[in-house]
Image (tube, rainbow, N blue to C red; front, side, top):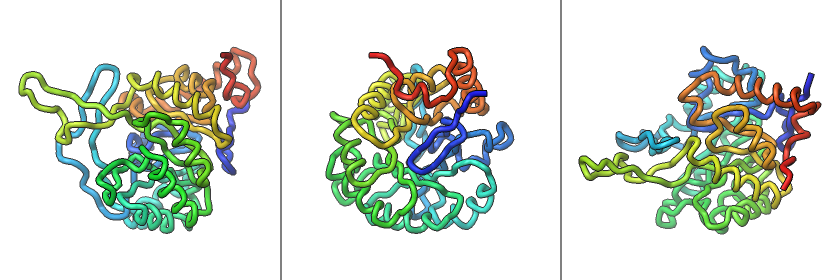
Length: 303
């Protein structure tokens, strides 16, 4: 028997496999396909202060080895989540984290305050890739002052585990990671989607209504691995790896690069049972390679 448990800050997870926000709904949507209790945890879709309809269609496009999305954080708001969704998911015996998104620092703070008293929400994941509407629409996560403003403010009001999700659309990911750590992040998850676009040559128009969107899937994995490796060497807090994980081997690569856990995203759309297959595959790898614990391979890359 191998030990699959990992630690993220004060939280002990039964295994390192979680789901990426926006690809797993509220978890309930996948309950017919897998036992949610088998996961290390699952992350609730991006939650905003108020109801959001998201962007106009078309807002998804398939691209070579990946997909673009510009859904625009469509959700019914944090109060709806607390009143209607939370009661339906709180019985699951796994970690449930809520991805928090805002267009102002004040919005992030207000959402965090509303979520802090929910017993079964053991952490929030702060999505700093959102545009800052007060500062011309540039994403908070693309500058050190932007990162600092959100992370420091949320830290003041949120006493539990705070994971900060980093944007890859930056020149130096390590600077952003260190800023988040310095301002009180308990863990860092990366990467969020890479900014991309698709063009329809026949109509000579963009495929997405928003022109640009977030690229995810296998196409981003080399970038994600590189960033996870750089960040995990530079910070002391645990790192959660995200980006193009389609199978157990992909997940193991992120663990070797220094991630303490992983999030599976785009793959859920292709195979709703992929998370459980990845957990089993990691266990098999550990047995075949004579490792007693998954912790033995975290950061074990030989450079």
